[in-house]
Image 1 (cartoon, rainbow, N blue to C red):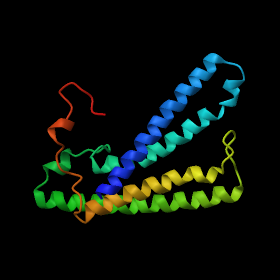
Image 2 (image 1 turned 180 degrees about the vertical axis):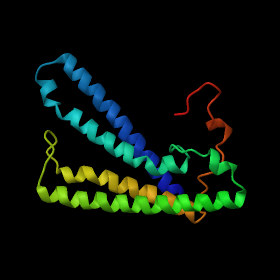
Image 3 (image 1 turned 90 degrees about the horizontal axis):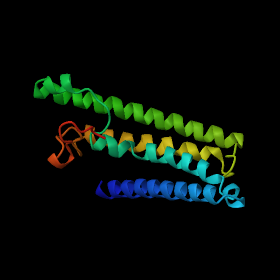
Image 4 (image 1 turned 45 degrees about the vertical axis):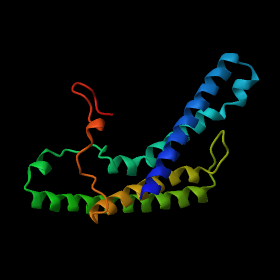
Length: 171
């Protein structure tokens, strides 16, 4: 599990830093102007597509760290036994939903690849872009399964270093 978490973080940081570098290069090219700006027209599309992989790639980590939006007032007010039962139900439903979404996304990958559609400036098959939701929902489902079977505790309290100070927004 530690290795998967590390790989996800490295992937996300790499994608994010690549997006920043590409955007900086694009801004610089537009300032310089000339043919360089038109030669780098592919950067905008590449960054948009990288953002898709960034968002879906972070689903599992966000769930594990308790960063998904949830309303936990009622859940936490329940007696421990009922609270644990409700948590298992939430994890089971989340696992089923994630598996179904990964399946639908895979069907979309196959469908779009069969259409032969290609991206305008990168000229890559558009079906590969839809791999991001497949991987993202698979990783999300994995986290729900790990939580359901007690291998991770995604409901545990955050360490004090991760709790925002009063008046700060939680990001």
